Image 1 (cartoon, rainbow, N blue to C red):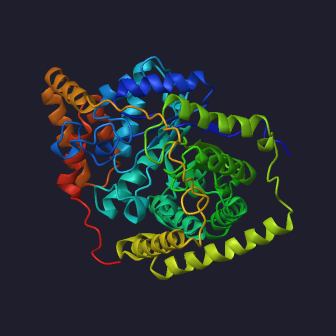
Image 2 (cartoon, rainbow, N blue to C red):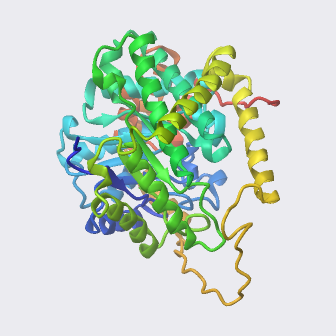
Image 3 (tube, one colour):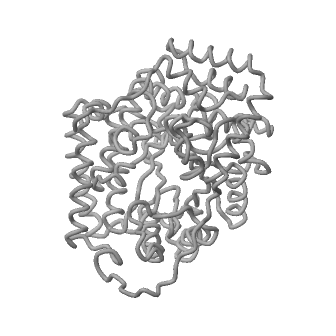
Length: 483
């Protein structure tokens, strides 16, 4: 059976200022990338404007800084949103960033039914593993669900949530990674159903996001087991009848915590193995990390090399043309069965806690992940878990060539602050305040918040201003003090 084309190939390109990201996007498109991936800097993820005192020193460091619609316009200057699909790594402020992206498309004359991409919008994993939260769990779930349902109604080609497994990079085992991600998916499905939307209207729009490590067969088994478990859940528990609702449509990162700072060129071998694993496991979209991402923002060379890994696996091995190429192997089938049992055991433990939301509220999931991270580190330090170049086969040579690193602009913070000052001076201040007040009022009710957020964005209200307007009603999250 043939797929006809390989997975969507992506490289993260967001860093520094919007202009730097625009240049990187154009470079990667010229190199044959088939989708754009936008990583946002930490202040943007936390709902802070680039000139906020709490953002000092962090602007543009782990992604691109976006404070207003003007920044999003600069990122996609000269790039038609009718012709690209963009994946955005953003969660707590996902609704704001999607509204900005759609506003850029609107200004370009691209109709809503042509806007294509994915927004991560997975708030639960922030509470469980990543920590980039803003609002408490209940209003976070509301915002997430508002975005999903708004996309179902208005953006037929946009994936409104990518239920993510950052639990793995935080320390979870492969079985726990899959179980926590499926449990979060179930929680989102239940939230949408509670809003009165039929399962087959939104389930085909759900997507997933995983991390892939170098244990090749274990990774293949993890994805095969997760795929059939999700299909069973959708058919038997939620009575979905559309086959599209049964599919575990997934993207992944090849090279997260599996990358090492020591001997970074070894990471090319790691990401190649991981990319081949996801091809054999049948994922739909792949992000291959650059070899220097354990300690730096990728250079043009490292980013291009990472993209070439995907292209070589896709086009020179032709593995992507075959569905489930390892299916029927005794070892792979037996390992898949074992993995399914392990995943189900974790799911049963989550159910005993009252479901994923309650397991996060109590700190149960966080405690489990912390223990696994400790166990992993102890295994590395003892040598039980081999990491080449780190705890075995370590080079003792002192004449190793240094790796060139991407130079981040030290002026990014100042440039973004100047951009914000100019924006605030020229925009209609009264219109901004009116729309922010309307957003706060909407938050006090039960209506979908996306229309009010879009209105504020189109008036050039900033990420920080919109977040503050919601905080007046929602407050901020306080994590559990004990795991």
